[in-house]
Picture 1 (cartoon, one colour):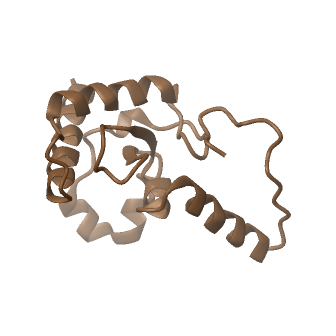
Picture 2 (tube, rainbow, N blue to C red):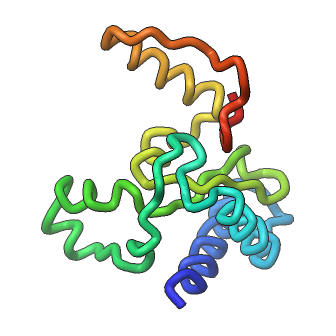
Length: 141
């Protein structure tokens, strides 16, 4: 039941946002189908980090508790499943499932720009980053 409510709500929110961006073809049914397909493709894990998502968190976020708890409250929702646009939202519905923390970090970046930021952060902290020789599962590197 929580999943169904989440699916409908997320599709509606993304349709509304994409229409504001100028996508007149954004419709709820297509978005629900695309989001549900992305959930299936995710295998329950974040498409970018590979971390298992906490699906029990669906429908549990509370704005009043968040205002009171601030950062601490939000940290508890790092693995809350969220929807990420693969593209700019102006074309057909195309989504990935990721955790709230990763989606927050990725924001409006495409995958290439996001990976460049991740690489810069890691290298700044002494890590060596090399491109994989094989495409990672769920990744687009």
